Amino acid sequence: IMKFSIALALLAASANAFSVPSAPRTATLLDAYKVAVVGGGPAGACAAEVFAQEPNIETYMIERKFDNAKPCGGAIPLCMIGEFDLPESTVDRKVRKMKMISPTGLEVDIGDTLKPDEYIGMCRREVLDGFLRDRAVEYGAKPINGLVTSIDIPSDHKENKDSQYTLHYQKFSPGTSVGTPESLSVDLIVGADGANSRVAKAMDAGEYNFAIAFQERIKISEEKMEFYEEMAEMYVGDDVSPDFYGWVFPKYDHVGVGTGTVVNRPAIKQYQKAIRERAGDKIEGGKIIKVEAHPIPEHPRPRRVQGRIALVGDAAGYVTKCSGEGIYFAAKSGRMAAESIVKLMQGGSRLPSQAEIEDTYIRDYDRAYGPTYAVLDILQKVFYSNNGAREAFVELCKSKYVQQVTFDSYLYKKVQGNNPLDDLKLLGETIGCLIKGYSVAKPDQPFSNPVESMKRI
Image (cartoon, rainbow, N blue to C red; front, side):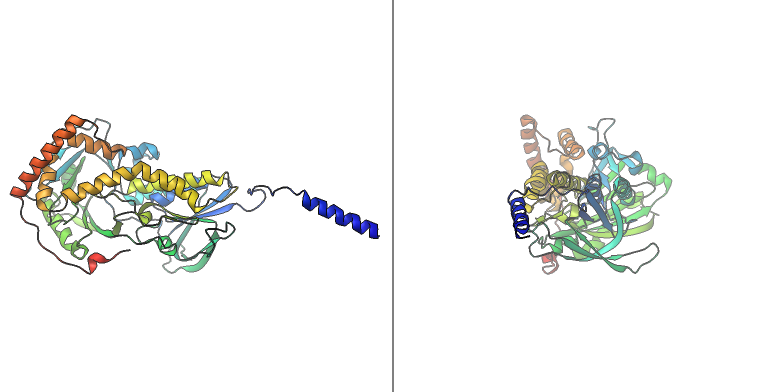
């Protein structure tokens, strides 16, 4: 018996001495890794779509309102239609003409440089977002109609890959306004929950400055809608915004009329009244069918990745200055983040580290679009700062070269302008327009809101 016991002990010891590494984690051996995408707008839906196509990743998409219509001008670039395989049903209008209106009423029509098949797509967010969400669900994402209220983040989540995040949320059923508390433990989180992101707050992503965008959807007569068949309007002046622009963008059977501001948010309704007045007869007699307001980030958050939590879209701060565009960059960041993470997970066999996500998703996104953000930031500071500069901006839009560079940069998301001779000529025209603009512009009205202007989210 003693010899038999010794033999067993030796056998066990030898087995330990020559043990092989454990097999990679796969869905056949253990539960698949779980990913929660918080938010179901373009950023969240495009991220969820990528994750859902991976068999070893279980994807959840949490959205408070699946019929949500975010306050938004709704413009999308031509490249987004093909890149994200969007059907024509998601585009209400194909804008091929833009009318720019200066503080003194100078009107400049742009769009002559567009090719017959080029346009800016105008969409309703409830239609576009709904399509993207439905597609993510078709690929296998599990939708949860819920509002995330808090997230438990383990203290060792950056080092311990076995740690999980627990999301606490209120789950809503159709027809109910009161949710029931639920929780979900996951291995990775993508925060796509907008400017007021609870994921960003939970991960200590830091604060950013923000604008308030205000829009009224106005139903006008079919006769008046004919003017906006392929036309959008942009109004500049300190009456409609001290640091942005007012707009009239065509939708399916109505127009979106709105404005935005960072520096004087308390006066947003005053600016909205002014844009309605500037539009004048073109929307006269229209019925306001919906009023919308929402914060818009002004720059990326200080920290966009913490452990295995990554931010995309508005939650990350991906809205451009000058144009205020965010839809394309939301969808693109959601897709880029998910594709980078999926690749790092190697078929669902491992979890990525914070450094790996930063060295792929964040690095690639900033390389691709950092120049665009920088150029538009400069343009906003130069041309939206006072009425003289705004007059110059509209005057410059008469230049075919300016129109060509502007539309190409917008439609295809690449900073254009590589003709040295034309660029030098443009510099001279800019100086001339600024001199002329300052000579005819009325002074900006002073305002002061030192407390409100310091608020961050």
